[in-house]
Amino acid sequence: MADGVLPPKKRGIGAMTKLELLYAQKTKKFDEICALVARELGYGELSTLSGEGRNQIEDEAEQYVKQWEETVEMRTPAPPFARSRLYDVC
Image (cartoon, rainbow, N blue to C red; front, side, top):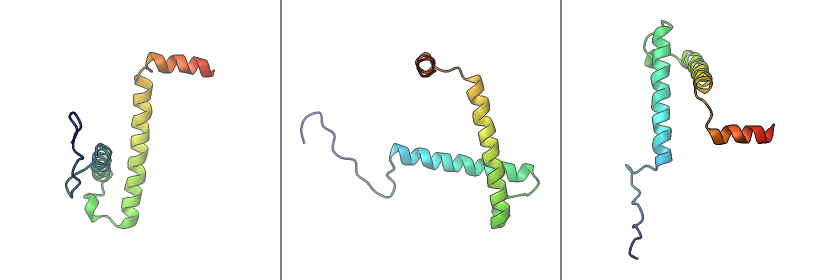
């Protein structure tokens, strides 16, 4: 192995890339949101719902996530480089 070159990462059952880890975290967080929505809407535990009931909860959770994204976008100012590119486009 050449100096300064790292050996290739070993891939095993427990090894995940950063992207895979982010997707796993995203999935876990969405499951938590679905569980919260189910409880708030009076459905009880998410694991007890049928396929159709779970689909309704997931649809509702997706709406909550979209609303949250829109709220964050409105409160978060665009970085200067993004604003300058916006003017170049317009």
